[in-house]
Image (cartoon, rainbow, N blue to C red):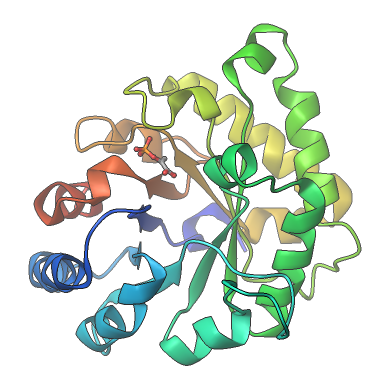
Length: 254
Ligand code: PEP
């Protein structure tokens, strides 16, 4: 697959924002704003309790549903957890895995990311695997070694045939929710590194087919330049995805 065949994906992570009613209203507005958009895949990831009502809103539209997390286990006595099968039955196509906020506040590791990716693919969910370095790690020139470890460990034991739908999101931790965006050159440098890494673990054909999103303070003002970079295949958007109007402007970046 060549670059032209990697369809851009714009994904909205609503984090722990919006009641069910608010989520439904925002989803309705997004669908209205972007129903004519044809050349971009669109995903919104509301909190768990809003997945089913939002699934009804987006069904049959160009907007698809994602979850923000899942359990690595199939089922069992794991109070408070949500399985991949449950997400599938709620109407999800995608699931975000290993977001830096989950790594930072909820003890997620490359090992749990690996379990969750396994659970997602077994249930035909598209895993959106988040990786990224902290500011300290960047300053210490450890960006590439950190990403190498996160990707290798996160995908350990998996084969390229299992990972055909994989999406990787490069989210420098220092850019998430801070208003600081990586420059287009910084983003391209890391995305090219990640693609080469996927090639060295799997194959060139595989790495060329995988979408690598950028995440970190994406907004209508910077999306176009980011997505114009050869290895940036879309964006994972946090804060700016909470407003239907702003998120729709990002989706209509061309
Ligand atoms: C995110 O939550 O994945 C994210 C990138 O957040 P923000 O766009 O707010 O930086």
